[in-house]
Length: 321
Image (cartoon, rainbow, N blue to C red; front, side):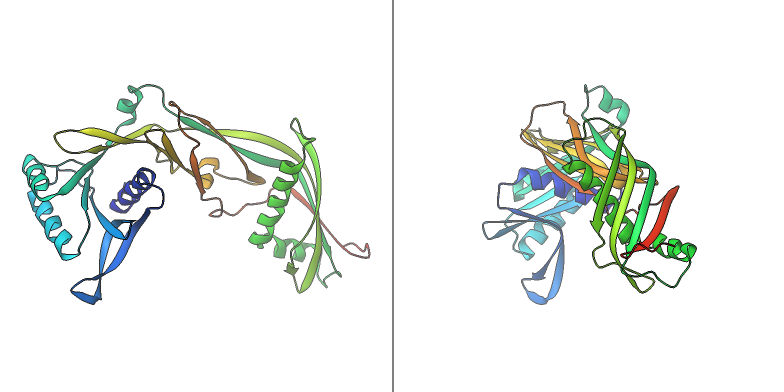
């Protein structure tokens, strides 16, 4: 984990712990109170009730010593911070703890445990992400009038239109999700939709007709890594737990009865040809929580590829290539 990733995880943890209406900003920039033309960087800022608290993070192998705490004391005064919070991945020395307590610097530790140790803590949460696969898949492109080009030239031009291919697969997904008659899979689906002002080889595409045999599948994701976010003081207290999969870039953060979930769709599904995220997510949590806050990322970071697709071309008059 890089220092940047460490800061971002801390930011996500803080965002679930603050009260409603508070704003948590990663990598914030503020004018120096003594020199407004000079911008100062804050790892994480909490904006609450017109005040700004600062969080500074250190992802090092050794416990943080009194020197860093003294730097944060000066930084708090210099930048007029309402509160200064230090978060370390390796804890703090005894001297650092004493100095922080005397000068009002709040210390927290985010500790990562190995999957082997995490496994001994009991059953971990997991998630299941659904996706649709389509095979065989036939696509008919309907132009206003046929281009002066061969079918092979049209196919080649079509295959590099990634946004158009994405829209076709989304039409398939929405067609399935809206169809209450679909009870079992595989299912033979036919969808016709507008092309959204798409132009190919200088000619406007009016419609797209799609026929596909649809399959519904699930990818089960385990979250083997465990991180604990704790108050580092004499009244040591665990505040939040993070269950995480580095491979899938996905995590669940638990703080009391609240849970915040981040899912990287592209990493989880490792999306291949003729597949798309269905929008279905099933959670198996190891504790009772409020309704989870779920954020999906990565779904637009991949290009859906086509495999063994039948492509035909016609115009509005019924002429074909």
